[in-house]
Amino acid sequence: MKMYNYALAIALLAVCGVAFADNSGTLHRKGKTIAVTAVYVQPKESKQGSDFIVFSDNAKAASDVEKKANTQYSSVDGIFSADHIFHDLADDGAHPIQLSIGPTDYDGTQNLDLEMIKSKGQPSVHLDASRIQLHIDSQDDRRIEGTLKYVDKDLALDLVFALDKGKFGTQAAAPPEPLRPPEPTNSVGALMAATGLLQLRESQYYKDHKTWPTSINQPELADALDYQPKMIHAVTLGSGE
Amino acid sequence: MIIATFTAEASKVGGKSVMFTPTVGDGEDIKWKCSGADVAESDLPPDCR
Image (cartoon, rainbow over all chains, first blue to last red; front, side, top):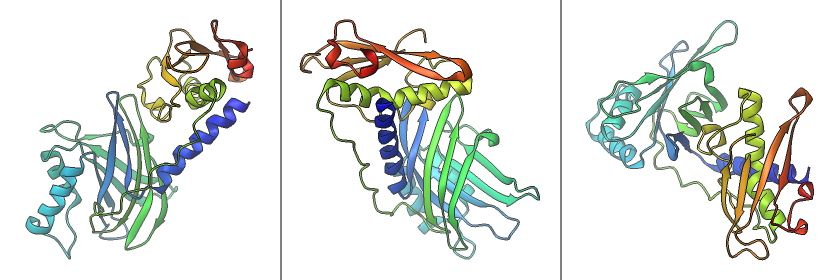
């Protein structure tokens, strides 16, 4: 069980790294992991309205859109249209994501929608709402903070947002570097550190899908190799169980 | 199966590999076993020995 303790320690450190971040997260798609930033929140206009949060996987596009908004966009009471920002981000080379947080139904279900423009010039697509995992840490009329997770066979999102409503978040201070576990000094520690979290992720994948993952690039394994000891050259998946 | 390969510079285990293989027991209890044919037992995690 020592191996799992070590893996859990690494997983905890990875989670801490995310938790420290204000408006950053990751998008895993087509075998690549890309940093994503929460850009803007358009607050709901009434109790039955929706908050819209826009994310960008392209920091330059986010910066450009912010400049354009401040000089060229029209606004209502100083509030810009999230949809306008969403589409402008795509025009500027990003693959933007827009989360709509609607009112809660009588049965407690939160109305959520996640929209993404996957390719420049293409229409947006609405992702599977049943896969959205939204956790609001705090919210009032002025600010919203929380996390958003989404995983399907094509992409995985793991995002953090902490934004003042109606304001851009691109000027937020850079998050601190994630904590790192101590470098193992022997082969036993190196093996545990290199594969412990991957074993946990693979085990969870099996329980969810009743089959084993076939590629290290699958979204469910995205964070499993974030930390690799210097003593390890490579970690790969072999055939079979 | 997971295969971890040490760097060539790693002391005593340079360039060698260790395989981790899962087995699914009753109630989806998953256990991982490991083996490294060319790695000394003392350089392997306790479950591999």
